[in-house]
Length: 426
Length: 69
Image (cartoon, rainbow over all chains, first blue to last red; front, top):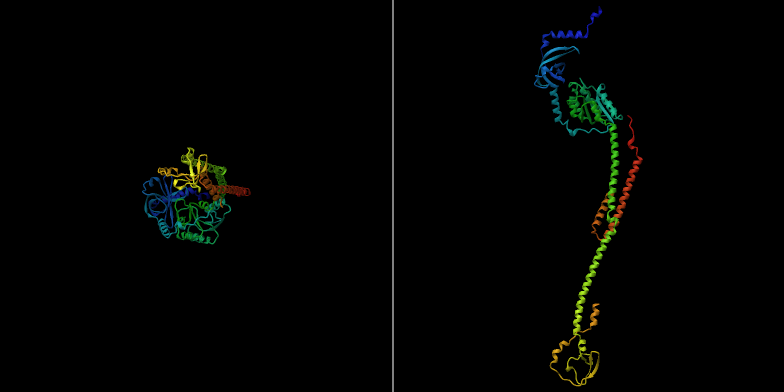
């Protein structure tokens, strides 16, 4: 009998379902709210939540209804919805089955996000110039996140895997809900007093409300003021948070942040090895190249056969000497011919020739040639020369002949002898 | 005197001598200098190669150190 007190879960859910369905008001409700957790299922149905600042309700809009929508719903969008409340028995959750949906301007959170983004951008918090470089080989990583949960585990295991020598310091914080933004900001500030190379600030994935702390101004300013380079790691692949914009680097997931922060030590070793090999090859190639160049120079003819340089000069010298010799002989021959001519001419004029033909000449006692009969008196001693000798005579008589004057010029001969001339030429 | 400087000078000396347009006395000067430079370059290269090999021999296992997994 006691057993009959207990009902099955299915029966309970079915009962609740029936109670709800019997309420006319719930079959046609009008809601104003904001879309979150929007999922476009591949079969065409939309699953999402509708919420306000304090509460939310799951919603479904089937493909046969949503095909009439003139907009694409997305998170943060403020909407007006008409639908029926029903229970999904499998999970025991109630939800609204949306019939009609209209846009109701921009969602509140969305507007707040855009406003803050614009404000911080105008203040220069997102400026590329302010971004610090993430050190390539950090020795200590600070992690500002929830101390439990997948995010911190992912970060730690990724760091351990990539470089086990890396030190990690965890700054535990709330990451969602009341007080979370202040806690995150406080832990970022606290990290500043530690010797940390890179700070990872983030959390795992969640709805836009879950991530909201990372869209808060106080967190953004804490990141901006951090002296340590910050990698934001808010687990939301698609949308950016304000933290992402301020941080020096943005990772899509906590694992991604750890990968950015810590180099894979095996890759590093490999690249060192590669560089080593390249360095050695580089030096060896350099020596080889220089050796080849040097050998080329060594093998040049001017160094291997320097005598060729002489040979050219020798030849040039020979050539000039030959020209000198030939030139001189020509000169000599020309001059010789002139002399021969003169000698011939002289010979024709020589008094010897006259003597040979039987003429003679007479000199006075003082050795002067007797040229005129007026230069002698009877009784003077003179010397008469003929071709084969001379003899002396005494003038016995004189008489003047008037035609003698014409021949005087012809009798004039050049001083000196033929022998003299030839000597000079030699 | 750097290696590159010596090699460059040797090269220009060889070029000058190859044109043959050099005074004989000057050519002999160049030739003497060229032989000296060639020797200097050879010695320098040999010394460099030797020290590279020496460093490699002393640090041969530099690249082979193992990390614990």
